[in-house]
Length: 376
Image 1 (cartoon, rainbow, N blue to C red):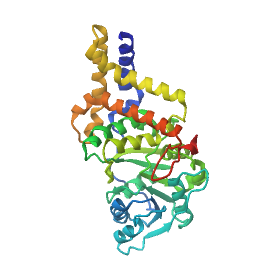
Image 2 (cartoon, rainbow, N blue to C red; image 1 turned 90 degrees about the vertical axis):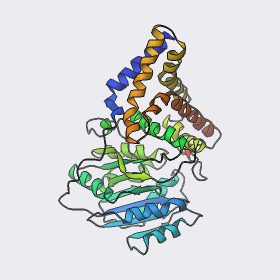
Image 3 (cartoon, rainbow, N blue to C red; image 1 turned 180 degrees about the horizontal axis):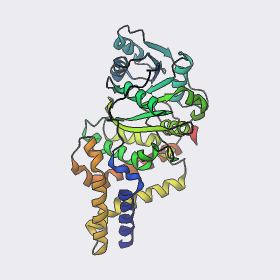
Image 4 (cartoon, one colour; image 1 turned 90 degrees about the horizontal axis):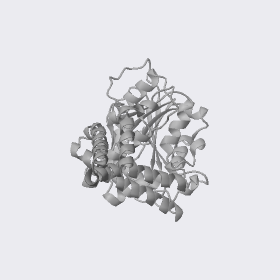
C-alpha cells in the first residue's frame, strides 16, 4: 500500500503544481466587454427534441439579447412529440427573428443533434458570419452574445465557447455536477485549450459561437457528423482553423433538472465509453487509474500505517484543496472536497455502465436514439 499511496501522492503533486494548473478555474468570461469595430450578423441555431419544459425560457433568453447587430434564431424541431415548437412560438410572442424548421431523421453516419444543426444551417440565411449553437436547455443572460462576439472579433477566434453553469438544485446534483466540470477541466485544461500554440482542443456544446468561414474551412458539420462527444470534436476541428477559447461562465445556465443519481449516471454513461474510443484496454486502464488517483488515498489514510498513511493523507488533502475553486465557482460547501473519492467512485461506475450499454447495443442513448455505435 505504501508504494501505491506514494504514487498517488506524486500524481496529485503533478496535477496541482503542473498540468496547466487546471484546478484554479480561472479561465472565465468576467473581463470587460470591448466593442469591436462593427457588430456582425449572427445566426443562432437551437436543436430541440421533446424540450417542452425548457424551450420557452431558452428561446426567450435568445430573443432578449442586447446584441447591437442582427440576430436570427432558428429552432430545429427534431421530431418532438410534446409540442416543443408551440412552446417556442408562444415564448417568441410573434418576434419575427424566430424561425422554426422541422428536422428530419438523421441519415447513416450522423448523430441526431449534429443532423439537426445541419438542418438549421441548410434552411437558413447564409449571410451571417457567426453561428451561435445553443442547446435547448440553456438560458443566457442578455449580454451573453455581445460578450461572445466581442472577444471572437477582437481576438480573431474561430470558436468561442462557454461552459454553461449546470443545475445543482438537488442533493445528487450538488454532489456530482461540480465534480463533472472539475474532471472535464482535468481532461482538457482550459488554459491549454486557449493557447494557440498548444494542440489541446475542446469546447462546451451548450454555447458555441463559431466563425462560419472557419467551419466551412474545416469541411462543415459533416467532418464531425458521427461524433458522440460533438463539442470536443468541434473544438479540434476549429482549432485547426484558428484560435479557440473555452471559459467558465455564470452568464449561460442549464435550466434542466437532472433528476437524481440515476439520471446523472445515465448522462455520464451516454458518452464515457466514446471518450475512451470504445477500447476495452483503455476502459480497464481508466478504471485502474481512477482507483489509484482517488480511492487509494482515503484507503491508505484510514487503514494504512506509517508512510502509507502519510502519503494517503497528503494525496487526499491535495485533491480536497484542488477541488475548492470549482466548489467556490458553483457556490457549494468546501466540505464536498473531502467527498471527492466517493464522487469519483460514482463516476467510475457510470464509466463501466457506459461500456456495458455499448456492448448491449444501447450506447449513446438519448431520447430514444442509440447512437454510440456510430463511433465504434
